[in-house]
Image 1 (spheres, rainbow, N blue to C red):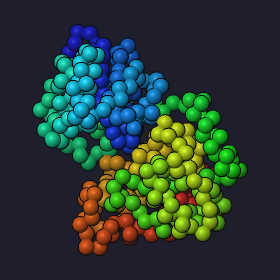
Image 2: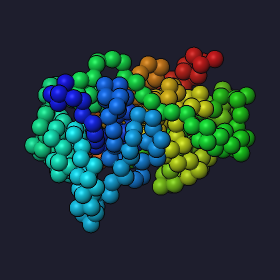
Image 3: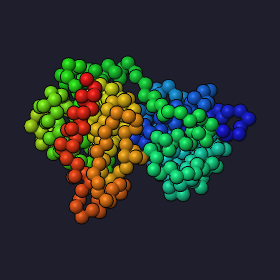
Image 4: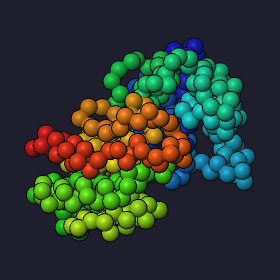
Length: 344
């Protein structure tokens, strides 16, 4: 534990993005809060992801950071004014290391192998061969440095009545109720190399709606509409379309109503896993060990391609996206059927 004589009064968590990484950090927040129940805990996050943290019972303050060069000094001033005792940098980039340093906090904690030289700005560096462990467990290591006890990861995504009502109203508007199993489908992903093709998603959706008599709901932000349109055009049946109708803050309530989520390696996958909705995930260039859906009751499909996981945003394989192409529609359908049967 940190040697203060007394517990730190003000703690800052730095994890600006992305959605999946923020979800991975929630157990670390819980562990820190349980260790320091009286501390004032803030979280620095990008504005686009902040709604997932609004009204979180473990947080006292959500700082929406503008990381542009024009707002850089304003952000530094904002952090210094809060007089943090401890900064925990879970992003591990040069800019977040610099922010931790400029915050003026006497204790700055991060990973020894953090990228872009950010480790140079920390007063305490967590060492160890942790690259092959899940991100959730890796982040928890920083909480242990603060004195948190090692325990099972605990995701806290509270249920707010207003968000539940909006979610229910949305499902009802599209004619969805509890008489059928609702399967969510999130076919987009930030990297092109993570995206299983639209035609395959469409074939899975058609099969489940026809053979299993499920209703498929297509999920995505308005920026992902193009991918959703491709899936809808390739379908023979009609799916419900939630694209652009939900906010980041709505996702936990939306995911709780699903019987299953079928997805690429994406942010919604991690939200679903955090609220204990079963997931069938298609993984290409990324590692299911490090960033797969956390916990039991999920299925991750991969293919035995020698070059994976490569963690590349652009495929260098002569057989483009072979790691994803080799995952068949049948593979996904069978995995989905198995998990749906287990939910009966």
